[in-house]
Image 1 (cartoon, helix red, strand yellow):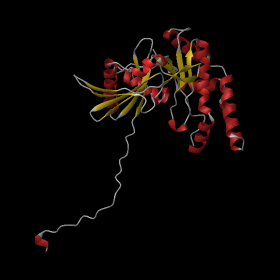
Image 2 (cartoon, one colour):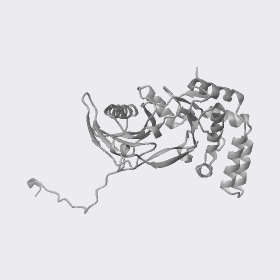
Image 3 (cartoon, helix red, strand yellow):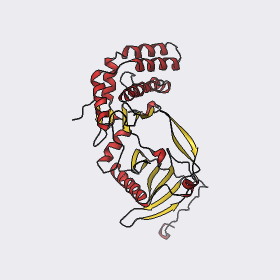
Image 4 (cartoon, one colour):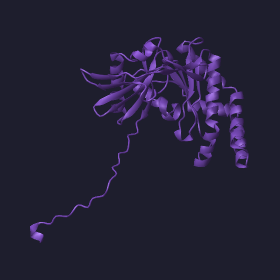
Length: 324
């Protein structure tokens, strides 16, 4: 049974506890869509950490200094340092390590990232890749908690009004998807077609450089393929960084996705639009080791606003003959 400190990313999840991005992903597991296996360290766990480590007085003191004129960057850095130096509560530590052990334990590669509840804070996502030990996972969780107090996030909360002591930061721990050895891209529905963009490596591919697929889903799907140049790809570099490297001649001449992949992504797009009752855009990744596709993010799609510019015409009013 899941505690409210640490929960698996599956089924119905409270966005106020696991973050909006995680909640959307978890919902779609009920629809049969594949996401990287993992768990969330919840907002309740964050608040327990702040309380047990007695961080609230330090936060309040630094905020008072900021309001008295101290530099925002200095204040935010002092709060983050207090977070990184504090110890996690033993009960929370045990639950995080137990969940990591269920994923495979030491030696199992995971990604740890922050998962904001309030996107208006404009918290930059803190992400740690290729972590292979419980100790590294715990350290990354503390740093993700601390990311709630970036200078931008503190300044935004001061401007908007929410109490810094009420805010919370969930953390996500998921198996690494080796998209750097496979591919990644986006998928979205447009009218009766689904559009898929794909490139080798990580991240949203550069427009015009990626493969483009147009799919008409159904019992006998129709697929139109346009091969992109795919001159470069993004790969992992270290615990937090990425590098851009040239692609090989074989990668440039080939297609990132096979027909079964394209059809599966198109099906996911239709399911997501229907589930959320609005157009959605999905980010996906293909693991280069196992060849499986994974959904890594789902967000509401902002449709373009169509405006018509031109002279305004005056339309004459026609009167019936009876009015003449």
